[in-house]
Image (tube, rainbow, N blue to C red; front, side):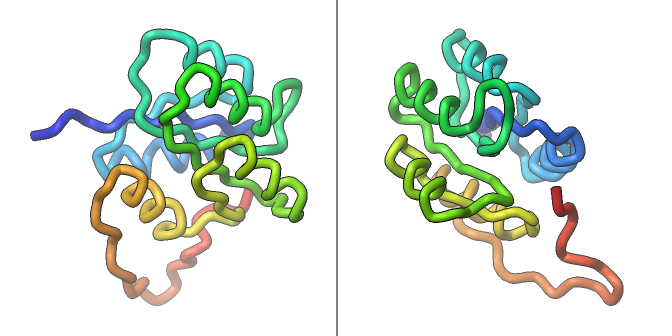
Length: 142
C-alpha cells in the first residue's frame, strides 16, 4: 500500500478545518491543519513532508496569497489548491500568478474538493454521486 498522502490545510474557520479533516481522512489522506498563515509557513519550512497545500485567501495577519508565495519559495513543486468565498478576478489572477494550481469557490461540495485533490495526486476522479433525499450537497458554507 502506498504511503498516505499528507495535506497541509490552512483556513481561519474551524468548521472548515473540522469538516475537511474528517472527510479527507475518510478518503485516506492525512491532514495537518492550521488556522493562521504564519503557522502554516513555519510548517512548510520545516521537515514535515507535505504533498499538497490547501489554503483560504482571507485570513489575518498572514493571508492566503502570502502563504502561497512562501510555499513557492520553500516547496516550489507542491500543488496548491485555494478555497475561498472571495473570487474577485484580481484575487484569482494573483493566486495563479503566485503558483496556485486550482481555485475552488466556497461553499464547498464533496466532489468539488475531493476530485481536485485526487487530480493533484494523479488519482482517478470520483464519479458523480446521487445524494439521498433530504441530503444537502452543500456540506458547509463558510
